[in-house]
Image (cartoon, each protein chain N blue to C red):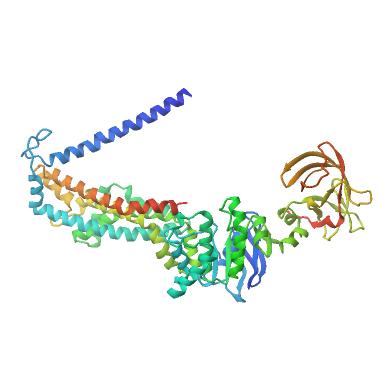
Length: 351
Length: 275
């Protein structure tokens, strides 16, 4: 449906977006996730047509739209600041795009009513944007963008202007609305929980390039690079190298030997999700790590453990508070990690 | 600590002093002028007047040269404002939307008439219009007044345009509007307050202008202030006080109208698009 081919944007000799290629299928919700300055917003603006690519192509439904003006692309956009027209009512805002398309009055009213039901704004049609809460403004922006039935809907940090509690509530609602509208959507965000809650597929970007594109689960389970392992969820990272002649045995720089799974070519390291670390090991276990408890902090559903490994490395574990066996500060114990949870992962190429 | 408090006190007192000075040197003379316009005496006597009448107002309306001057001034103010608003808004749009080297310099050039003495502008324009063969005094005056008030309409329009977030125009375009359409539907309505404020400034400035008009008038086409100066030289009497009071009423009315019609809009408007 949407296809990017080698899309590049240079500012001076800086490559903000570096030869990105990506496919988005009909009806799919894809998140572009990355830290600020990774090029995700520039990518979005090139798809919308507000930024001309230095190289590469944007295709919509198989047609090259790279040279088309933004108002000819049929791409809807929900702005980070919502960009509601302050001098128009909610109804006028939603109608604006349909007026440009010369949708007849009766159909316009019908579509508007359906959308206002969908985004739960019934009865607010005569309000001005300034008289709405942040969450309501966000939903008006969504309804306005959907009213023109765009082929593709782009959302730029749609929830970042809302406070934390509201953001969580709206996350699910936003996904339901996008699903109900059946639009193909590309969401730009820097918040991994937002991307995971909204998207069928997450494209992780860093320094103008795509690090990995996959479902949230696959990204979490099998991160392709250290950047992805550390950006999506928590990760314990061990640098080091495979032992010569054995693709399953890894020696960390601290001198810890681990049996690992997965394959990656050097330079590589081992990524371990903290919840896969077990406190207390049986003699039969492989990957037994002696450690000392330094700190324990209670956070309701979970407990944070500050541990120091034998080689001197400090690690932080987050474990369910329901676990009854609670080691105390100062106590020495054995940690155990299943080899299947020690994933060999490519080290980042740092420039 | 004590020193800081003292400094605060000093700041408060000096601002009060300033307010008193403004009242003393601006408001009191104007009040005296208004009172004098109702003086019945033939000569400029002591204050307050001993007898009252409307004779100077009658003198004003009986003297055709005053009325001619009033008509010229009003026509000039309306036309110069119209030209300056259109040209100023266009220039401001251009300045607000473009980023190029020399933009700041261009902005300075546009605003320059504000900083050049009006006597200089008047004389330069007299020389210029004579050189290019503009003999009609009204045309000359119109050019002069438009040039003088243009910086104010540019400033006012620019200030309100800069406050309009670029995402608003992009939103309109992403909804299918052409850039021209977005300009008319979004930018112009939101900048309306600023543009109107600039227009009022322009009107009042043009109406009050003296120096440039002195150079560009001829005996048959004179603005009201020029007529006043001429009359004052010929026979000094209190007609000038009556005209001044009328001036005040006219200017005050325009400003009041502006506040009533646009002030409310501004209260609602500013909170929204200046975030």
